Length: 227
Image (cartoon, rainbow, N blue to C red; front, side, top):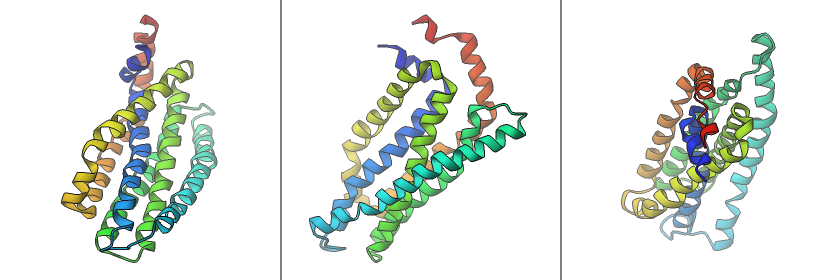
């Protein structure tokens, strides 16, 4: 029972847990805001059916994100491995952190800004799709990096990632998000969330630089073997 929690001491798993929790969680958060924004009589006044059709945008964004996170990421990783003498390092996956940070933050900030400014419905809807694209990149990359770093602990690591997601958004954000949205408005809330995401993604830089050394440290400490 304790093994998934021991993995929080492994930097690669900790980074992956953070990115996975953010990537999945932002979509949950935005889904809570969709009905509040699109069905509001003072903004778009959508019907329940029209509000449901808004989710076509993140569906398309998610499909594109899956393609890019899989095929494009593999192409980049193979190219980097060739330049590294044919040796693959899991940290090569972290180059996807740049599009993850940019697309996700753009989607969050653009959605909140355009919704509060009452732009045409298509504008926040497109930003919803961009957010889904970035979040799909993030969730796929975090899982791949985590499993590539510690294949022997893959099962426990996935439990760790899901636990982080459930705590961050199933417990923390669900307590105050809707009230925060009502009190401060979509622009303030989603710009703040975009800033939080960018700040968290900055940890990708030291993870890329020191990730291999961190993995070697965990091998020497053999923390998982003690439980």
